[in-house]
Length: 256
Image (cartoon, rainbow, N blue to C red):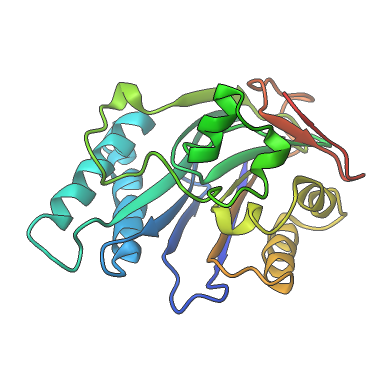
């Protein structure tokens, strides 16, 4: 049986435009980071947080639900000057027993903890494009002045379900999925997150430590995270997609 917990903090912003879903009964973990539209980012993120669970319950796939959420945001912004241009990132994990499927749009991320912290998703961002072209290294991207410029967002253009990226795997005993908005991974390094996840504490406490440490370090953005843990009845080891990078609690990191 899986356990899912989630939490969010406004950071130094005036309002929280992040939304999350942590529903173990449905087997759904989701983080949405709203943006734009005359401060209607919270509206866009809420549309995602409402639409995806409902559409999954109606039998749609995760990619189909995210595609529909994109349409719902676009429709909500039409004819309303206060919502024009609003959008949202999303990262979501749908679980069937210990099998997971992850889809995302934007720079909200999914990580896997197996004793090391593996970044599973690759940001839809300006700097990721530069890395792909070989113009900068992953190390240089960390402090790049345009590291928060994203190239894909829900509510901005057509998004057929077959254009929503998808990765799959199976959680093993003691392994975690971590989904988060960029407010967490912008302020905490992979090694810092790995060190917290390696601590002997409950899943809820690990989540609280992650968010609290990001706040303590001066996180200016909204900070949101969801943790998914496989229970004691899970297979001894899982099967996972190839990671983007791997960070250890000892401070080590390697990019793949």
